[in-house]
Amino acid sequence: MSTLAARLASAVPDPLRTGAQVQLICLGVALLLKLLGADSFLVAWLYSAVIGSCIWGLIHGGTHLLARLRRVAPDAEGGERWPGWGWMLPVIVVGAFAGYVLGTLIADALTGHRSVLPLARGLTDWRAWGGIVAISLAVAVAATWYFYSRSHLASAAAAAAGLQRQAAEAQLRLLQSQLEPHMLFNTLANLRVLIGADPPRAQAMLDRLIAFLRSTLAASRRGEHALADEFQRLADYLALIEVRMGPRLQVRLDLPEDLRAQPVPALLLQPLVENAVQHGLEPQVAGGRIEVGARRDGGTLVLTVRDTGAGLPALAPPPAPGHGFGLTQVRERLAALHGANAALTLAPAADAEGGTQAEVRLPLQRREDLA
Picture 1: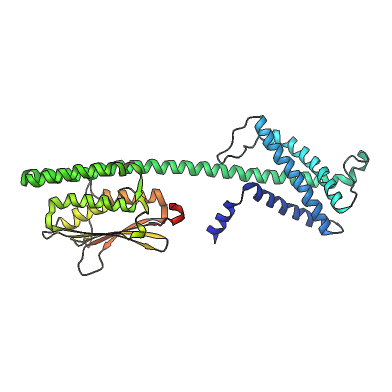
Picture 2 (picture 1 turned 120 degrees about the vertical axis):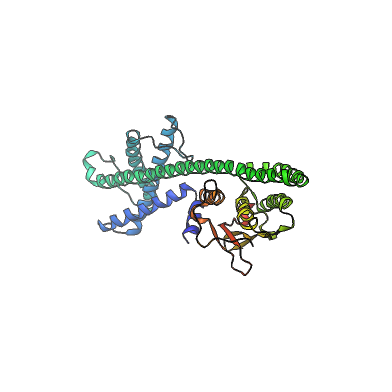
């Protein structure tokens, strides 16, 4: 409900929201006037609403005019900056006084009353109109302080959110630049072994590596891509590994058609597949199977990488220097993009085949967001 309310509020233009709040203030003033002895609440509310609207319109227009005359730059949300109390106090005083006179004339025309206007019968009649003008001025000062304080806080929040997005993007670029050499070094180390043991397979692996790097280069520079592209990069990588492992490696990729267009961080699953090969399948003489799947769970996209390899040790020792980077990299990318709304878990596979399953959960984007 809170999310729906926030979306509805954001859909209403700011002048309309401010105007509605002005009318609530006018309603409060009408209640005060009734408590002070006004004959009719409806008449008091009509005068308060018309006078309040005139005062707000004059102060709001005066603020924009003053900001333009003084060439005050717009704030982070495109609105006029606060010119300062030194400039605004005269605008508020003139706006409150003129708005009271104009609003009273309009309300008199609507109701048929004949109100005592400021200075209409000289300064000696200030008791007849001075109180209500003072109330109008006090409410105008308080309302102006509230509206522009709120605008200042909104601008500060927008600026902070922009800085946070920039920091997150910089962190993601750093993590991605670390990921690519990490994968490449692992592959080159395996290639070095094959050069001495099986030169034809080493040549085939080198050809696969060239093709894989060519196809991955564009994806790794985009920041994110469709889930179908992520699965294709994994297929390329596993084909590269299959040159070295041969029939010891079996691969299953399961991507539902309705999830192919879902955007995900580029190469998000690459470190998890590398871990499954290096720590799960390669230590076993018989090798094993890697399964990569995607499914939806309500509003969550669930990505799994499962192997039928050696599994997790009962008491895992601290990772050696240079190890454990892949899991850390995935967790940090998810945290930078989605905060607490995304997570990576690693657990033993839940069936008799054994092995390990890594599960990534992140928010599922709606169809209208993808359009």
